[in-house]
Amino acid sequence: MREGNLGFDFGGSWAVLKYDVDGGFYKTKIDKNVKPTKGVDFLCISQTQPLLMMEAKDFSLGVPHREKFNNVPMAVAIKARDTLAGIIGGSHCASAASDLAFFTSSRRKLDAPPRVVFFFSDLGTHLRREPRRAKQARDVLLKQLKRHLSWLTRDVAVVGLDDYQSFVADLTIRNV
Amino acid sequence: MKISNCTIDNFTVFDNEKIAFCAGVNVIIGANGTGKSHLLKLLYALTQGMTGGNGTENKNHKDTSVRHLLNGLFKPENGDLSLLLRKRTDNAVASVTLESKTRHYGVIIHEGKASQMYDPSIIAQMPNAKGVFIPPNEVLAIYPGFAASYEKRELAFDQTYYDICKALSAAPLKTKNTLLSRLIPGLEDILEGSVVQKGERFYVKSKKGERAFEAHLLAEGHRKLAALVHLINNGSIDKDTILFWDEPEANLNPRLIRHVALFLRELASLGIQVFVTTHDYLLIGELSLAAEYQTVPQVPIRFLALSRQDDRPVHVQTGDTLADLQDNPILDEFAEHYQREQDASLQFVREEGGR
Image (cartoon, rainbow over all chains, first blue to last red; front, side, top):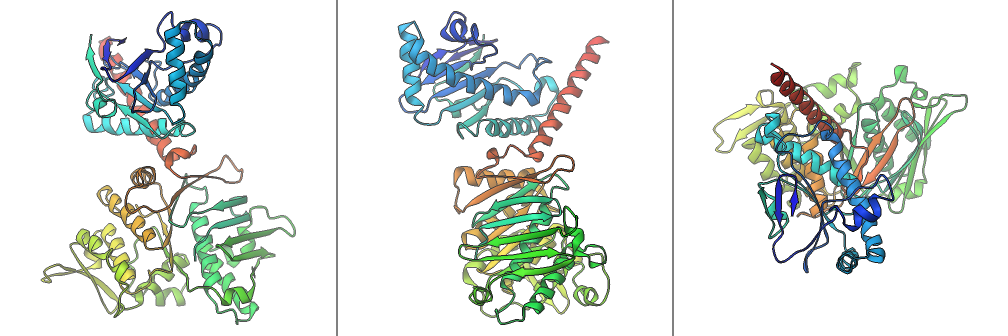
């Protein structure tokens, strides 16, 4: 699955839906009818893990000017919030049988708090930010995101290319 | 005794707030001017008033004591306690009430006088709890002669400095609290020596005993930790203490912050209720990590955010972790800092590209 210039291979232990794919339930049923609506990039189900909601940003070519550092956590939280509604709607109203089954399983998984993972490819190089400062900046992002999602879950992570595998087992991310 | 609730009416920046505390570590954050230190001093004042007598004292005498205490802590001009009221209309009243599990104790300020609300029979049954207040600036350097000067002269220090110097004046106990004494080696490791009091002066004696550094020669942050060691050694901090620490991070290197966070949690694990105010990103982060992941020692931790818009009264928000606080000026400012870096960097890149 692709997001920006990055390819995501989730491995065999995950069932994954690219939630915001063109032609999918979110784009055709929600985004078209309820504006503004947001959605995360991936919904992932495994047998042993909580429901994984993953948002990915490819910042390797620089943070676009409209993506203000301060706005990123709120944007991710809004996507997670709106995706919850999408899961419920999809479990009742998705027309494709595979989508219906996926959303139903996702909804069942929501008996426990979901895990929200925000992946970004780079938050430093193009800013000439040295690695320790990049780590600090990431910590600030994480704390902001946790604050915005404290109503939903404490299972929140902000990950980069160096550590995403610690948070999402079997996932491989590569440049495409 | 643990403070479970505090109700504040019309006092300094507080309009009407009821604040619930946990029995472990209470972490109070907020921008300057939101009343963090006022809250800490109020809790300290009432703890002292609540436990300071045996219940047989004359009420007038106790009212005078509490008036002196509020004067000493808040230093209103000319000792006029009515200046501590938020709204100063005719007949305006301020009141503060503390609750522990089974007891209530309060102070009313009216027409510039403070009087207590309490039941003497209840006070008589009070367990021997006491408050220890550690002010933001370390005190070992000013300790020699400070208490005597404070008693005789008008000094620009509030009473917390006097009280802590009085607490430090006691010599070490012969029989120490074994549980609390276990916290001392960790602090002595940081100091690389033990704390020794000789007359009016404090020293840190190196581990091998070959050198003793006078307190003045130590880093300010180390002096703070040395004072803590002595307060435990002399029993000023013991199992019945309620500890109030105003900005522990002042003059401490960030490397020491995690040790302070652990020390606070260890105190709480031994039954000591702790109240700290802080502006420190690391300290709140360390304590929130402990709360979130329930690390050992597992103790109750509560975060309180004080916020205020314009001249409105202070609003208090509480949470079990940092993430529960929507008002977090420390985190907001760090985010702003990285935003400024991003803006500056993008501007730089644009200008470079334009050349």
